[in-house]
Length: 230
Image (cartoon, rainbow, N blue to C red):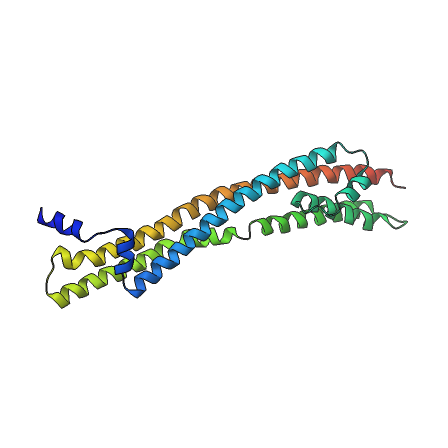
């Protein structure tokens, strides 16, 4: 019973644990807390961004396949920054370059069209995935940073035991509590980062496949147009 009362009197609230920690553990906790905030910022912004991109891409594709004049459609969407619109723009740019001469290499044109659109798909996918690297890094590193705080807190506990020559709960508990708190903050940053990275990687793969399907369909349309070019 006396141990329970002593533990309650120490006031192991997160704020007290942070304020009572030494500079090293405070630095670990602050760094992990900032990382956690940035992780959630990325998660929320990416969810909003991908939701908008998917919705606008669906409308873009629906309008494209319903259009009867590719040139007019291209002019209307010349400033469109959607990834799928950039794939379309890359295909149109290559089409214009490859068909402006008198002698047209049909096989070469088809190959260059595919290369241009595939390169754009890869570039747009990399651009969308840019900030996800932080999620992967946080998910991998944060637990070890928290573990460093754990080890440091336990070292402080042993140092307190040696200095006080007393192994009672009042001497040992503060350092151990700081250690566990640092570990908890590390897990709080790492767990959502890992879950979000895996989920967003899947969504990016889906969108990359969507751009690939659009590129294949557009390539087929241009290939048919190429057969009509004299």
